[in-house]
Length: 110
Image 1 (cartoon, rainbow, N blue to C red):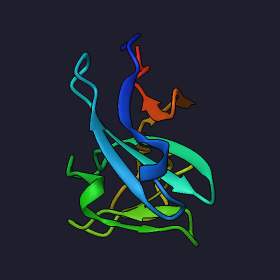
Image 2: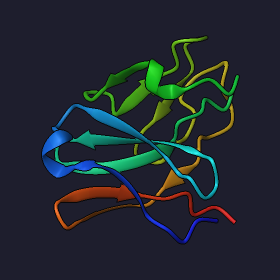
Image 3: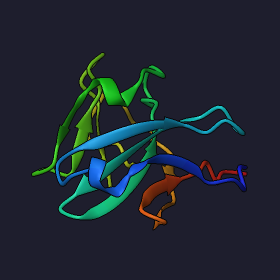
Image 4: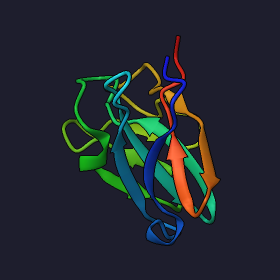
């Protein structure tokens, strides 16, 4: 678990319908942060089906989902749950905060 928050980007660099990636240097986890109509959500940047980067896929803000480019698995960005096969396991959800003009996240898993 990382106690240290990871800087993702300045708040002005993450507009509604966009996402940014970062790397938690303590745990080694990739993080992808989404702006869904002004609400921020963070997931581990790893598909639970084939361990491929979710950020390489397509973010559909209307459906609140990200689709893995490798095999088409989709995940709800708000809670990480798998929405369709071939993924059945959720993706880890991480906390997000806005502080000092920046967007921050961290891998808070034990």
